[in-house]
Amino acid sequence: MSDIKFSKEEKERIVNKVKIYFDNELEQDIGGFEAEFLIDFFSKEIGS
Image (cartoon, rainbow, N blue to C red; front, top):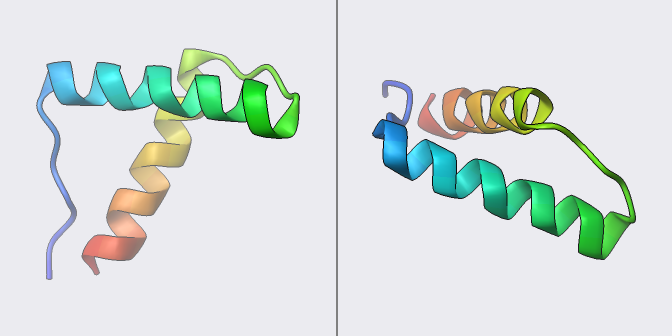
């Protein structure tokens, strides 16, 4: 399998959702850069 690919708009929406999740559920502030790295990690792991 290959990596899961997202459009720029999809990735921006997912980044915002990840940031909100971390804030609400884990009481952790993460930046967009960190959220994007997390998304990239999961897309590679799930896609492989």
